[in-house]
Amino acid sequence: MMDISGEPYPGSEQPDNIEKTVYGGSTQAFEASKPVNILAAHPGAYTGMTAAFTAGGEDPTYVTAATTVSTAAQRAGMSVSLDIIPGAGHTGDALTTGLQITAGKMYPALGLSPG
Image (cartoon, rainbow, N blue to C red; front, side, top):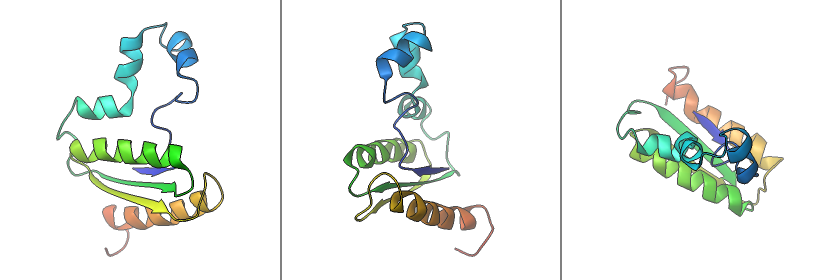
């Protein structure tokens, strides 16, 4: 899995609207759909999976998101890397460098190049 400046969960920028429109106002259903909660509900179920997370060092909201979700992924059994890109914000270098870093971690995990 590659996560480049990813949101902590779908709809994180407008949670009240998402809970109302997508989950019919059900806080329980909305919470159950969040990746950190899915991962926590299945400890060890993701053993053997690889996840690479990146975020721009100048993008504190997404550094927090990457840290939180990567920690949950590791607790669920994934092999996890987290790279904070110095001087990058949320676009530009965060994306291009993030793609280089995460693809570089995925190639060996997928058997496409030596580790």
